Image 1: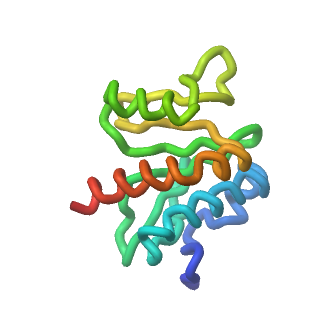
Image 2 (image 1 turned 45 degrees about the vertical axis):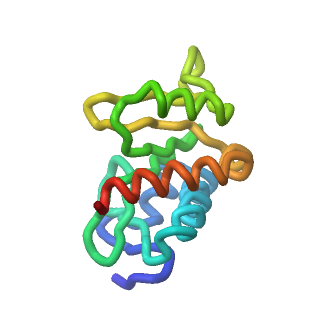
Length: 144
């Protein structure tokens, strides 16, 4: 197993995720990692879990965010306690709350304190400044 600037191969590895999801949805993780690298250049993927892709910074996994590529979409989980203020920021940025279509919008999962945001490549590009801002805030809360 070798560590590169982009990922750490472990038990499941990138090939596992590309088969479980798709190459295209796993590639969206790379797009998110590029955003993370703007404030945490040493951050790499942790492919160890079979339920999501986490992040490692200088050794241990830090759970400020997770990537969850699936066959039909991609979800980014942001560690954030439930908050009307945070939700208003999501709405102001243009991200609608999840409605009838489970592959669009965002959803809060109280048991994990995660906001899952369904994103496309276009969304990651369009909302890159906003996503970087909320990823950085979650990262800073987690490491401090």
